[in-house]
Image 1 (cartoon, rainbow, N blue to C red):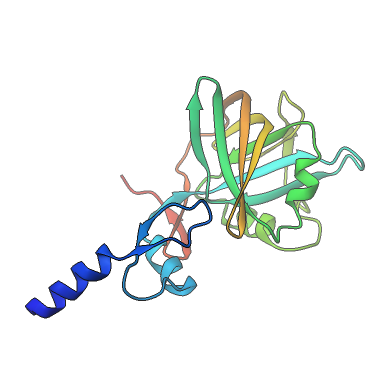
Image 2: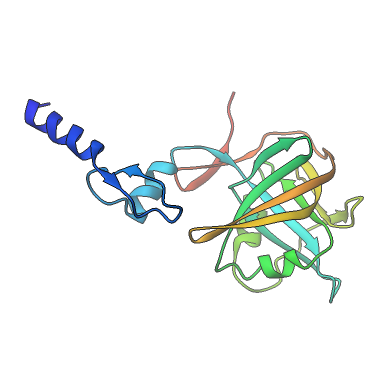
Length: 190
C-alpha cells in the first residue's frame, strides 16, 4: 500500500462522527456501509436457525416465525434473545401469547424454515407438532425446544431485539443443525 494511502486511512479513522443516536463517538470510516455490502459481509458468519412458535390466545391457532438471529443472553436468570423485523406480521401475533417456544431447527427442516419465513397464509399447514410443557408448539424433527416468556423488547434500527426468560428446555431429536451461511441453508460438517 502506498504511504499516502496509509496516511489517509489513519486520518479517516481518527475522524469522529457524533451522529449516533445515543451521542457516542465513533470513528468515521471511508465509504458508506450499504445494506447489500453489510449483508454480504455479515453473511460470512454462520448461524443456526430457529422457529419461534406460540398459540394464538384469541383463536387457539399455532403461530410462528423463523429467525437466524438467536442467542443465549444470561445463565442467571436464564435468558435468550432473537431479532424480528419491524415489518413482521407474525411477531404481533406471537407477542400476544402467554408463552413462546424456540425450536432449534434440524438440517432437514429447510422447508419448515421457508414455510415459517413466508408472509401470509397458514404457516402450520402440513406441519406436525406437539405442545411443549408451556403449551406452545414443538415442531416434529426439531433438535431442541425452549419454553419462554417475553421479558423485554428493545428497538434496534429496523428490528426489535426480543429478550425472553427461559421456563424450561430439552432436546427433542438427534441430528445436525440447520445452518444459514452466505444467504443459503446447509448443514454443519465437524
